[in-house]
Image (cartoon, rainbow, N blue to C red; front, top):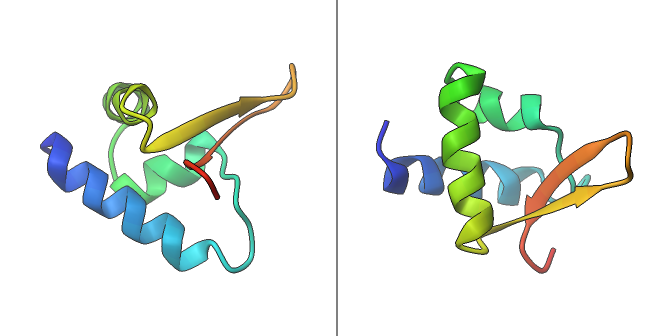
Length: 69
């Protein structure tokens, strides 16, 4: 899967679910992408670097959300 396709899937999937919650677990994102975790991690990290997604951690839990949501 190419980066642009992954970006579209993630943004569309999170916007669709944003009515109920704003932060999502890593496993939720891998299900949206339908990829293995190692491949998905690279794409998700790139989305965080480009500020499409934001990373949030409480120390024990890591969550991702759309930037500004």
